Structures are given as structure tokens and as C-alpha cells.
Length: 447
Image (cartoon, rainbow, N blue to C red; front, side, top):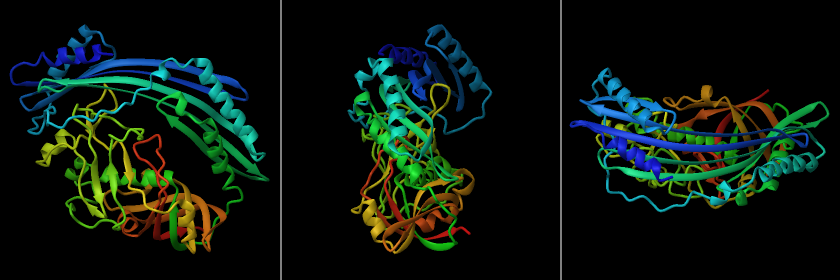
């Protein structure tokens, strides 16, 4: 959609002497199908477009947006942003991104086949997923939902300092949420498959995943409290590294809300652990060639061989820290201003697969899921205490399932006590990829 960039450039070109303007223009379309009991429960399609405008004048910043691409409305939003800037506080670090000479990677995140994929086939995907789940195991008592969804979007960013760039992407998925039962015991589970286009969706994988996750915990009990080694399932690891990446935001560090503040160069983890945010990896769900200020995304190594190597910055947080942006600006769309965030986190894989990691542990716990992360994790102190469920490990083998437990430690101790990083890298529909992760000496509170 070339006109998006043209709109953005025309807005940015209206900058007055001593003024900076940034225009973020986007268009987005999505479809969702839900199946229930062999029929289509719902089918919805939505399209949205809009323009967000930042104005910096006299070290004061103003912002406004409009929910369409009408240029007369964009002019009104520009006037509103200018007016808002008049009433904001002076901030010496305010400003739009300047070109930094880093060329964007050439990556293709657009699958044209998705645009022509008919609704009949989308419906068929959701219905087939429901059929496979219902027939996959007699212990499946209820299929809560089976869904097909897709989205395509384009955006353009231009500013008065010379940035002018565009990006586009497509994504699609199928997912299932089910309830399994045996006697009076019931457990829930979910599975999915994601891709850039419909040819990458594997309905059978989503069904198998949902069934296994629901049935694996049937008969789970509350175990006695203990200190033991744990293996985090890839999805749990993805949650953990997302939390860690949040503490490595230059914005959080500047505000004193990070347990890793002022620790660059220190050994913060076991030497086998390397954490990377690489949006240029096209396998990542959050891949992108450019960040949400128009700078090139790049591979940022945050922790290298256990040593804290880097924080993530957008333009504003970089200025407050007297450094440069790491191409890590993100935003929620045209209605918001940019902030700092990771897009494609992953741990560099190790050598063992999950069965090999299980075999190496005499007494431990395979953690399949955690809960209470927002209230149970303190990103300043590092305290970590969350609800969990999973399967005990005894003598190097999976044993009985357990639930209603709490696992507790600190992020600092967990990173230092990493025993192994798995080789089972799993790209998830989030800002982080998953991999099995073995950690020693975690407290499990049960009966």
C-alpha cells in the first residue's frame, strides 16, 4: 500500500522551523472463525487504519491520532498534536529518531496466498481441528473452542529528520482449548499452529498438542514440599525470558525499576546461557526489518555466555542514557507513541532435547504451566513465586502429575543455577521463542 508512505511523508514535510514531526500510518485487516459442535459459531472480519502524529517543539512533545486515512483529518490531528505540545513539560531528551546509517535487513514477512484464502477454507480449518480433537482421545470431554484466525497489515513511518520507511506482514493460526476428564478429575489444555500463510498451518499438530496437554495432568495431586531441579517447558521458558527482557529495557533501567541496573559486564547467569533479541530472524512471530520509529531492527545480544552485555533502547531512552538506539522501539499501533520492547527473544539452544534433560535428573519437576506471573514476580528485587503444574521426575523418568503447587526462587538464582538449555527451540506466537530449560535448586511448596 504505497499511499501509506506518501501520507506519512506529506505530514512530516509540514514541519516548521525548529519543529520535528513524526507520522506513523497503518492499515490492518483480520479474520476470526470459531467452530463449535460441528458448526460455525462465529465468523468476523475487521479492518482498521489510522495515523498517529508526534510533534516536538521547544523540547515539548505533543501527540494526536485519527482513525482513518483522510488527509484532512490528519491535518486536524497535526494541529491537535501541536497544541498538545504547547501544554506539555519541557524534556531535553524529547525528539524523533534520526537516521543512524544502519541498513534494514531484507526479510519477507508477507504471504500473498493469505489475501486470497477463501472463508470456506478458513471455516474448514476450524471444523477439522474440532473433529480431530474430539476423535483424538476418549478422555476429551469438551472442546471449549477451536479457532482459525489471520491478519495482514502494513505501516509506514516518516519524520522530518529524513526517515521514510514501510513494512508489511501476514500471520495466521489455528488453536484449540479442550477439557479432558477421568472420573471426577478434569484438566484443561490448549494447542495451536501458527504461520505466515495458510500453507504453514498444521491442524494435526494443534490438535495433538491440545490433547496431550489436557490429558497429561489427569490424576494430578498436590505433592509434598521439596527443593528440587525443574525443567521448564518451552512455553514456560518463553514467559521467563520475556520477564527478564523487560528488566533489560533501558527505560526501566533509567527509572530504577530493573534488577539488572548498572550491571553491564557482570556475570549474571550460568556460562551456558546466551539470550538474544533478533527481529531479523524471519522464524520469529515478532520479526521485523524496522522498529516502530523507522530505524533498522538488528540482532541484540543481551546476555552472552552468562555475562550481561546490553540493554534495549529506543531513541528517547537512549538519549537519557547518553547512548544510541538498539532499534528496539515498539508501539501498540497508531493510537500510541513508541516505547522500548523486545520482538524476537530466544535462548541460544544447547545440545540436549527434553527427554535427555529429563534423563539427567534424579529428582525433579517438569513444569508444564505457570500462573500468577504478574503478581508473583518482582522485576526490581527478582523475587519469583508463581503457581505451577506439571509432572514429577523420578530416576530420570516422568512420574505422577502434580498441581496446586507454588515454585519459588529469585530470577538471579535461577539464571545462575541453569543446568542445561535444550535444543528444542519452538517459535511461539509471542515476542519470545521457547526452549526447554533445566534449573537447579527451586523450592516447590505443596502439601
